[in-house]
Length: 250
Image (cartoon, rainbow, N blue to C red):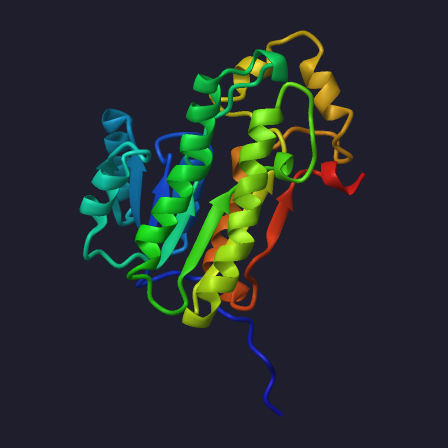
């Protein structure tokens, strides 16, 4: 009798590009993929920090390269990635400008949509051009792409757009053997979110909506990223993986 074997979660021989990789969720994603054996290309604007991350990964025996680049500069991204096949893309770079809807202006709209939607869309387009069969695109979305929240109409709009393009890309790229999925975290303590939790009552209000009773940690997205990038997720595409402690289960 031949027993089935679990598909490999290892990523040796594959190259992964991670945006916003100098800190927070991007750093965690890069570490997870490197630990799984992938060669990682770290993309962010902060060249000095990016070099530190690449050096630390290299010192740990992993294969890492720093690529200092503003993800919103589509022309520069296209030139930098020309002729470089990428097996795994983690579209992680993102931003938020939480404020009441009435106070949101065109500058806020442009800033959030430019990074969260436009940059992710076109980077996926660039990478997909030469991505081999079996490739995986992972869009870092949010639970806010599935629910609404006061003071976050713009962010919710951007992440809802990410969810829509994830599903559509999965349909279009599926015949080429490329999978496209999203990861939807709840509130995770990172440099970007830390100021929010300093506001009176904010932490308590957030925790009241999370059945597991705690905020996310960057480590919580490492397993999901490595899983979606690997052959263990070979039949998963067009899906949103909720990493929200149960927020959206209400």
